[in-house]
Image (cartoon, rainbow over all chains, first blue to last red; front, side, top):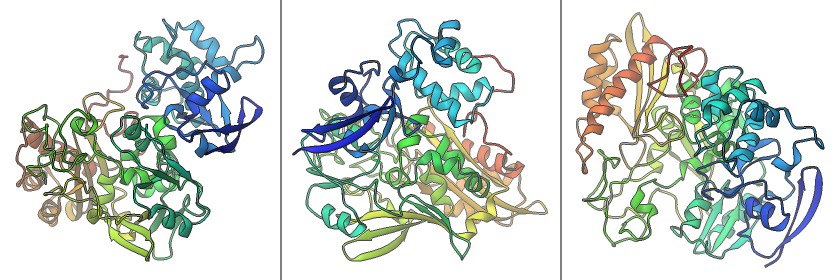
Length: 152
Length: 351
């Protein structure tokens, strides 16, 4: 069964033929489009490492079937900087040491961008922590992450 | 994940026809279904994608004062709808206390109602589970069962219903609109989810192929907006399922309770409406005495299904907490940690 979908990924349009409907957005990004910045952690919606923006909203790409998102506008970690000019959230993560090993960081940054655009947390650290609770960091860099999101 | 056929119907009629085939399942966001499929817990042979069906993503006030929420409205969109959160604050708080922001952005109203239990033995295909494999037995009996049900369970199954959203929906008399091959019907949300009895594999009252198209809140649910809360005790303060939760709504006149709504989550195989406790509250002075008596009544039939007797007292205490907070008045804004009884005071430092 071949299924054709069209996605806009980081501003670029892709027409994609799927030979299997089981492909998730995460696997499509990593295996078909070679956009490996989006990480596969648990692959079950528990860790947040695969967070991307779909039509402006942050979701877990591991629990999204690509075929169901035909026509979607997708933003990944590879699409947020302008050349060498870092996105403000990226810069804030560096300033505040918001990571150690870095594996969860693309998901953390995409989640933070989503959180900021949702406009619910403001400058309340408690609301930021709650809003970022879908992103686990096994190194425990949460203090720096909260500070980074506060600044950004 | 097993192989399946993917179908994207253009109309409700096409969807219902496509899903009538044996082995078919509806796909909304997939936040629960894909997880179950990846674990080999469910193996649908066909997925019928209902995310693009026209007209299911609206929140509509109806002429009779009720509110109709389309089944494809996303959890986050509903919770952050300012008018909805003002009129039904406990429901908005329950929504925001569930899952993570990413999951709430994807998960749908209809999907939330049909999510499967989070019982660890249901998820572990190496374990015996009557819900997953009817007749195989239940490894929660004699296993790690501290989070299992204390109300409504049977010898065959003590799994709890995991939804936060459904708890205040049950309390406030929500109605579920269902489309099937024989047309439209509606049932009370309280009648949607089944108790396990001898057939725990049947979670709900839907016939094969039936699709939830909307949830309706009656006009009467608005009366509680000034005095309602949802409280949830979980094993970490965010992004965890309820150990016990409680939705409470009161109408208070001159210190006397005129109407009461109370439902519990995490304690039973379905969202648990505490009707006898509501009756007990009406006419009483809104205070600790009445709240404690209501808590006793609500758990009168509870019994442990394993090492979980603590949930009985926990539920009683949470009921008192929820009723006390509801009586004090709905917070002007949903707290930073929605539904948490452990919200820290402003300015507290912790990570």
